[in-house]
Amino acid sequence: MLKIMKQYSVYLPNKPGELKRLLFKVKKLDLAAAATFASQDGAIMRLVPHDAGSFNSVLKQNNITATKQDVLMISVANRPGGLLRILAKLQQAHVNVEGLYIVGSGDTATAVLQTKDAKAAKAALE
Image (cartoon, rainbow, N blue to C red; front, side, top):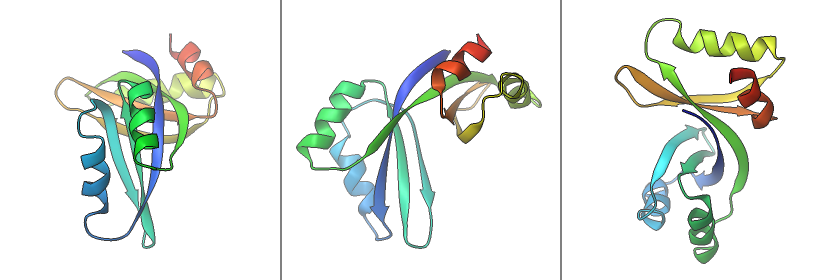
């Protein structure tokens, strides 16, 4: 898989139940990836839905503020050096990785790459 998708970033206060409240509101939507990045003051929940249009609608209906950006989802061989090969190609193309998280297990995982230009990142990896 090598696909550009929308990632939504939602700020969550650092209080019990906030993550559950957010995920309950989007429970009927299929997520390709999700990750939380916490700090002492709060957390940023990053969500990559399969259907960005429906996800956008749910956010609006529930008055949830989110930023969105294109991210690149790519299959990665789940073995030593699998991610390094991808990062080397991006470096050669002068594409800076601003964020990265990996979901899945088994022989293949999926990396979510955040860059300033997802199209350039995709072109470098095709």
